[in-house]
Amino acid sequence: MLLSGTVIVDAETVIDDGAVVVADDRIVDVGERAACLDRYPDHERRAYDLLAPGTVGAHVHSVQSLGRGIADDTALLEWLFEYVLPMEASLSAAEMRAAAELGYLELIESGTTTCIDHLSVHHAEEAFEAAREFGVRGRFGKVMMDKEAPPGLLEDTDAALAESERLIRRYHGTEDGRIRYALTPRFAVSCTEECLRGTRELADEYDGVTIHTHASENRDEVATVEEETGRRNVHWLHEVGLTGEDVTLAHCVWTDESERELLAETGTNVTYCPSSNMKLASGVAPIHDYLDRGINVALGNDGPPCNNTLDPFTEMRQATLLQKVDRLEPQALPARTVFEMATINGARAAGFERVGALREGWKADVIGLETEGLTRATPVHDVLSHLVFAAHGDDVRFTMVDGEVLMDDGEVLVADAAAVRRRAREYAADYDAAH
Ligand SMILES: [Zn+2]
Image (cartoon, rainbow, N blue to C red; front, top):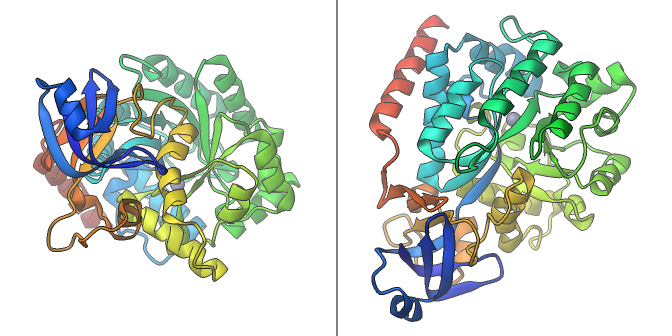
């Protein structure tokens, strides 16, 4: 397929009248449109105003998609233990499937091609099957909670690790390699030392399996971990093996100097979730400090009940605005840096190679956007500025993952979008009726 338009190769390179040529799962050529048309005259064609690498949502919870709006105006621990975890505990396998499908549909529709998805304690295979069917790329993991969990989610340590291992064997790196496994303990508050150490052992045992958990999102969480372990949260995670290049920690809002140093020394990835941090009043993550230390910072929308949207463009906008106002520096986190977080840094955090830029030989994960129309903020002087400050998920009209077209001209090809939404609405109505 030959895709033409203004091509955003990466944060440094834009081709105004360009083309991206795709064969199988790879980008085989990127260049001027006229030259590509000469070289590939017989390729099927698509034209969009802007072509960009698909974005990477480096911390999402697809299975919370039925809980949008159930816990507004609460802080993390109340939000989690009073509302979101009981909701997760109540979901049947069919409801989990419906929630995951809605999540992946929204990712595809708004231009996210890779995710790191923190699932739930039960029925994780429903999400794996949905991801496989919908064709998204990502890291997925069954959540482990063997301490401090509501009824229905608390599990035995050995059972949590055994179920994770079963899912690794079944889904990690199978078929086209789009689906990979991340071990996902919920967070230090809800996991025993044995569970966290067991997580590291499993990650070392299975080639390419990574670790993803929440860390230091909220001050009460940090205080709880310190009370229980006598350590700052990141020091505790380090002690039990949960730092390193194969680890991505979501949030890291409340870290001290020594923890930041440790994150940098160990090459641990951090996912910045600005909307969630604002909505739960968690705080402002020290992103500039992390970047100055060379820490790989990715971007994530977090869950539908704490954002409440999976739109990556809204997240990019929030990411930069929050840093600017926090530091009172208009230069803070420029569009190019945010765009890198949402693409190439995210791919690195998710552990996918040759993903996150439209370069020859890289994976064909491409999105096409329109810039014309009532709310689309034309004219566009600077395409990266447009993507970060003005674009919206609805502007995405084309989504390709691994060379497979998942959405074409605004129509999702891999699922019946209306049916997915209808099922989600029905289950959400049942939930409302019961609460
Ligand atoms: Zn989260």
